[in-house]
Image 1 (cartoon, one colour):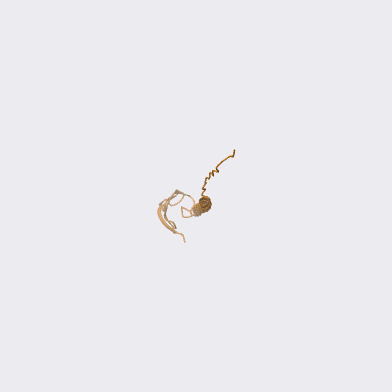
Image 2 (tube, rainbow, N blue to C red):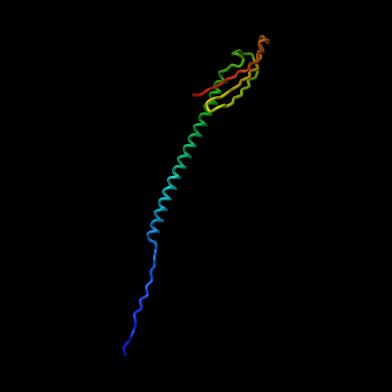
Length: 129
């Protein structure tokens, strides 16, 4: 008895998009690099803004010190002693480099010449270059 058999070939094809997957990986790498650049740009911008804020604070502190030094040097009673009174100052930042200030002096001499009391309104315009 002879065995008779037939060869049956079963083939299956598995198609895997190798090229598409590689392209997707490259796209992901490019996207990651773009996000890294964007993150670095944002961090740089944050650092610039923080530096600018510190500079503004330092500038404001310098202006406050200048006003305080000017107030110490200014003599509200025209350099005389024996006087009393009040000084009222208002300032408004009109533009970035322009400031308008009003100062009102209400002084009276206590020891001598009471008729020499005075009230004065002074306007100042400060420009920075």
